Image (cartoon, rainbow, N blue to C red; front, side, top):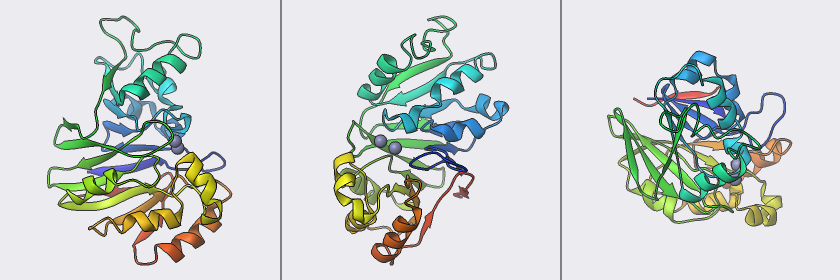
Length: 256
Ligand SMILES: [Zn+2]
Ligand SMILES: [Zn+2]
């Protein structure tokens, strides 16, 4: 199972793309600006899009994606999210003002995309992979995803979150967690802002990691541009017992 990081930054700027992860060539986790680097042909192969929450850095390129592949696809792309997330997309983006409602185009009977509500702990099986929905704790309703391949090996993506128990409990139930893409958006010095915006700092992440029985490779994401050095210093202090990489768009891992 290939995991390709299209975007994982907490902002924009040269080389920075916002959150989007391609699993093999047909499943997308979030649709941030990283999607814009795909070739048109690659975009056309995406069949399932899981959205972690409604924030713009995670959904901004969904409208452009469905518009770009409009003429290429024969079956609707399936878009999955919490009820609140789907409602937010309908109300605030696909509302015919910001963007046309592609869940009704070219016709209601055969649209370019279809929304699917998912509930916490629901598992969707797609080919020989499964995607489990895990609730997390963000400022809007949010979920993470655990993607498991045919050999029962898993990749997990936290979405945006602060301190919680749900993600860690779900991860502890997995037999083999190979890699965990987890956010650490703010440095320890911005602890209060992190708490307010419900993002981890290296310190609060380090505390939560004590709940995890696995020692997966940590792929640190959602770092705010301009704070990379500060966050990296904090990570090496607070997470020194872990194998970790501050990932960037273009990185990929293969889970056998
Ligand atoms: Zn967010
Ligand atoms: Zn975000």
